[in-house]
Length: 62
Image (cartoon, rainbow, N blue to C red; front, top):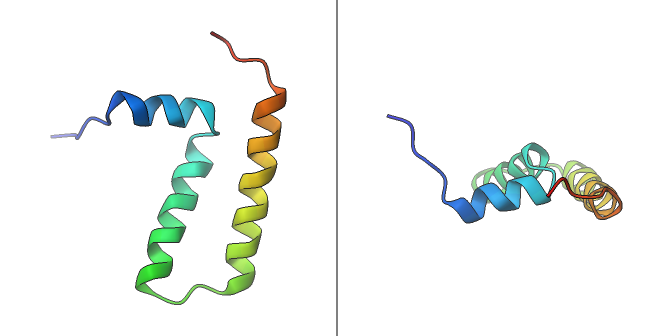
């Protein structure tokens, strides 16, 4: 059976670039379990910052 996400998580996904944000969350969780090269973390944070900046410039569909 598939778990359903709370509505607030779906809204966050829509607002923040969704899939990339989810992947960054996974990466940050993995960092706690195993060593992740610092450069990879830097690149992930730069990518998320760029996506967040772009999302601010895009008019919402609602």
